[in-house]
Amino acid sequence: MKVIGFITEYNPFHLGHKYHLDKAMSLTQADYSLAIMSGSFVQRGEPSFIDKWTKARMAVDNGIDLVLELPFIFSTQSAELFAYGGIKLMDSLNIVDSLAFGSEIGEIFPLEKVAKILSEEPYFYRERLKHYLSEGYSFSVSRSNALEDYLKQYNLQDDFSYKNILNKSNNILGIEYLKALIRINSSINPVAIKRIGSEYNDTSISNDFASATAIRHSILNNGLESVNTLVPDKTYDNLKEYLNKYHKFNLLENYNQILLYLLRTKDKKELGKLLDMETGLENRILKESFKNNNIKEIIDKIITKRYPRTRIQRLLIHLISDLDKLSFKQLFETYPSYARVLGANKNGLVLLKKIKEKSNLPIITKFADHKKYNDISFIRTIEYEKKATELYFLGLNHPNALTNMDYYNSPYIK
Image (cartoon, rainbow, N blue to C red; front, top):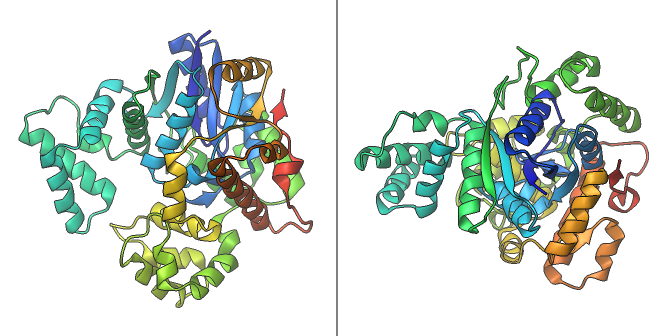
């Protein structure tokens, strides 16, 4: 019984995801597949385009055997924490043999080389990182420059361009997966699948393998029909069903008034408690929030080469969910406290049985069952999840009150 795992967002599931799944199953000769998927909010600091149950149904309909939820406290974090949250949960299941992830380079050696250096953080590398950060560069650029300096200093260069490697979104995330595997001394074997088609952040559609960003962009600007050939049939059917049910897709702009209210009523000290808030950044955020009524334009004014857009957006999601540094630190230390099922097929039910045999983690299939557990970390993590779901559906501004959806929606079983 060979199991391959994926850490995903499927926002939405597209042809590139299908290719990645099929390729990974073939390369590893896996019998079963398992995805740990972000739910109501995603890593780039935005609400999911579609709700988590629709995403899970898409995944199962397109071949994933079991979908588990990546808890909200990790789904809207930096690449490092997002990756750690996924890997730690996956490893704790005690059934996964391989991890497959997409990368622009598609080769494991250079990614593992970088991950090892970043995990060990040699003195020279740390000093160069501090230097570039002090020059006002973003963390990602500072890290890339420091790594290049380190490789040159110790004559560790080879045929790969590591600066280019660290300039690609999927490579960066892949390195973070590898770092997390090293950090927890996991026996899961990593497999890099070369990404094909559009770049991760590409909004244009130039081939059949359009990015999720381009697909969302096309749906918003040209209608759902414009992506009919860019996603699997099952995905298109689920998107149509979602739109018929909720009438709109979710966007950060849907939280404009909520965010304006919070930014204009919170003081500097309160903002300073937010996870990933850096001293001085709260002043910049407060200043701009009083100059404009449009959250997108406020973000445009805040971002710099040191503070990229996704970081600011994640801070705003932490603001509306009240996720502060202290709370995250406490929950991080006891993570994971459960595994929650969002979708499964017959093979997925076999995997669930194996998890129950091999792992001590509580398995949540019916959301109300969480009330049976008295563990504080479990309860607090679930409370953040429930809050995230309430916020997600609030953003849709539906004429009906879409509340307590965690209780009303069951996992999709195919």
